[in-house]
Length: 309
Image (tube, rainbow, N blue to C red; front, side, top):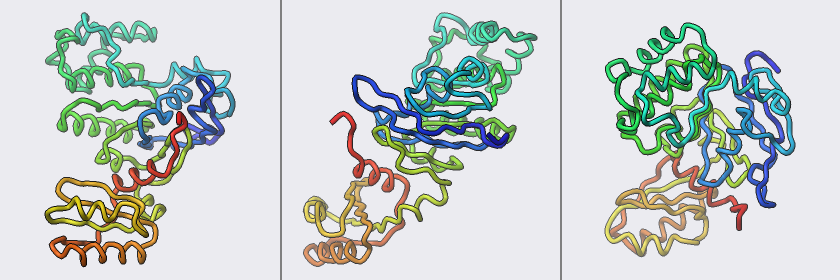
């Protein structure tokens, strides 16, 4: 494994109750990258992250993380990874400083006081260090959780939907900090449902119901999927939507506020269908648009089959 590749895994599989939750998953993540990990709920993202960081042993597959074997060196991987779960998992009856000091003790770190001071400074927690964690808002809990992940100076951050339930400003502040870590050479694999966050990643892997459907630099994804897309506006829209559902050339119909976005892989056929709708409903305004990430991921999800069906 090259020193420039931090995660290099191939064929990882995991099943529960006879159902394949992760199905022969491959991933290569270069050092310092911010790698987005997307997919619908129940698609295997959390299970994959736990296999990568050494918390779960795959049933088959192989690979290395930070140079260590995912099958045999899970303890070495866990010592060098920062893993932030979906649920706040620190002690709510301890203060911010006490939580960070406790985590530093768990890792057996030297110079604990100085390390805690640095973590508080990096995440803007100095003024609140005596506040009990259970009284913090979602955004401040998120900062504390990230500080705890980074106190042992890991080379790899694994973040499982870290910004769920926090306000937009807290999300922006969080991503600013992730970019600072990236500039210092820290690699980040982050799962998210927010499209505005996904586009901030260097690359994106999309997993649906255990199978990886897409893995590419973020800027290249629209060209790879190559969806033609139109925007329809006007009132009423429901009749137009009914006409579009299942029509020739239509692979996706979705509401975006007061408009409908309709997309398909056959541009010419889709255009004829859209023009037919406007002819039948002249009050509808139509405009050709570029497919965005949300349209692309809705399309990918619609094309994949739920492994629990």
